[in-house]
Structures are given as structure tokens and as C-alpha cells.
Image (tube, rainbow, N blue to C red; front, side, top):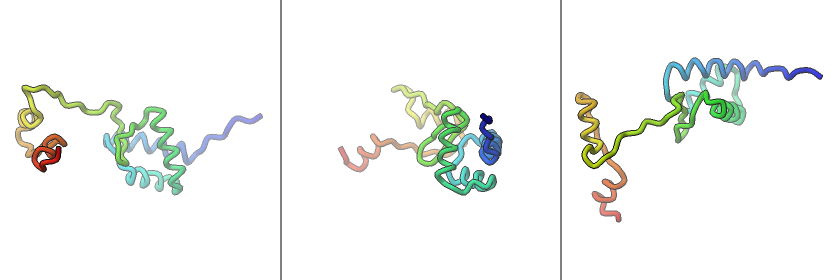
Amino acid sequence: MTAPVPNSKKSAFFARLREVAAEKPYLSFDRLKQVAAGRQIENIDTLKGYLGEAVDAGLLHRAGRGWYSSLSRPARMPWDAGNPLPEILAERFPLLPHFVWSTEDATHYLGIY
């Protein structure tokens, strides 16, 4: 009986995936398709399978809506009644213009209850 032969395209893809994930914490599916194409992986089902393996191995994490992340923990904003989000952002990022809304705000302003 012979040992399974490693898939060289898959190995090359995972090596490049590690490099790309180290460069940027968030990767779109479109960017991952480019990485795969650079390793001669054109089949979308194959790519999705490899991405599933990358997630299972902890190399990438699903970030939702076609995005993947190398960050294992999602960002969490501290919420309490004394520090609403706009005040937190203004305090931590005073030079950054920002707009904050929530579904609660939208339902209030649009009159949807």
C-alpha cells in the first residue's frame, strides 16, 4: 500500500493563503479566487472545499457575507448605558469622522415598530 500523494496545488494554495492572511486580516471571496487562480485552481467547488478545510484548520475564520478573516475573535464594542457607541468612537478616534446607527435607531426614525 502506498502513502497518499500530497496535492501540490492544494499545498501551494495553502502556503500562499498563509502569506496573504498575514498581510491583511480580512479577505474577500473574490480576493481568495485570485489567490486560487494564481495556483491554477479554477474550479469554484474545489476552492470552496479548500476554504472549508482552511476554516476547519483554524487558518481562516468566516467573517460573513463572502469574507474571511485571519482573526479568530470578532471585535466586540463595550456597551453600557453610560457610554453609547458614538461617544466611545469620538473618544478613541477623535480625528475620524463617523456615523452610527442601529436597527433600533432606524425603526425609531422610520416609524417602524
